[in-house]
Image (cartoon, rainbow, N blue to C red; front, top):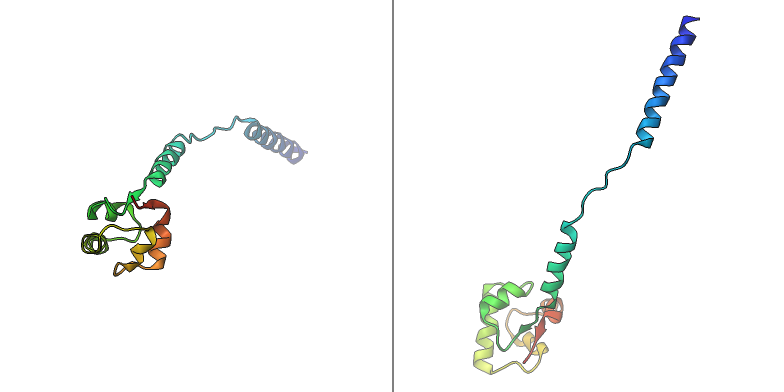
Length: 111
């Protein structure tokens, strides 16, 4: 008889605890950093690099897959052959291939 009473008390305690957990208010995490990150990435994507006006440091900083040597090669090509007439002319620069051009096509312009 005592064990039945004990089990009834344990059941009532566990039921009360589970109801309290289910009924507890949930706390929503703050996500204020995400919109700022999206704003920054949107600004970075809208920046265009002029092949005829950018210096080596700008080319290296703004273009993916372009290091110091390739940026200097672009500037040297421009100085020896004149201004770029199109973005596709960048393929004539030693070390610049189709993959690098395709990766940066949206960021490049020729003025």
